[in-house]
Figure 1 (spheres, rainbow, N blue to C red):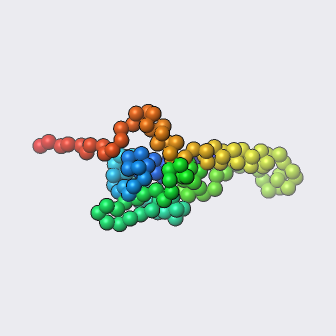
Figure 2: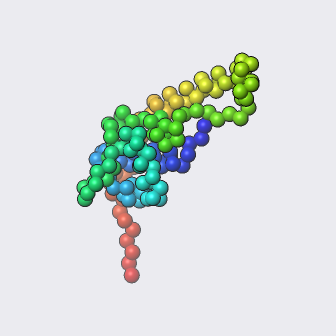
Figure 3: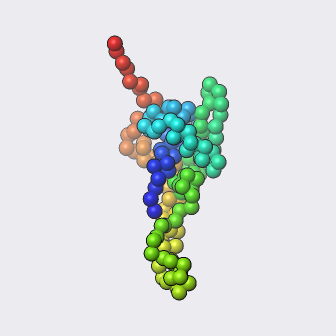
Length: 149
């Protein structure tokens, strides 16, 4: 299994909302700046996260994206499934004929995929926030660059 860039950016975006704004509406441009993610790409990711009911969008001056559920109720598995689809292992060597003949490999890959899925489901956005706090990541707005002429 390989995590796509889109999935990794999705996790970073949800972490950012929970960590820097306690789940309240956060503008995509602020998340993009802090997480160094291209804004247009981030907006596409947010559409997928909205369809999966992981974030909500609010328009207006105090609008932005907010978590649709509490950070402890959103797991990395939720994000992976929202952006990438089901958590599964990709194997090249298991042909349909071999599966019909009772090959052991498909069963092993299935069990392994379930364990990987459980591992992703065992880590919540709240866990990431707590890890960020333990690492001493600064909260709040990152100061914009100052340019002097």
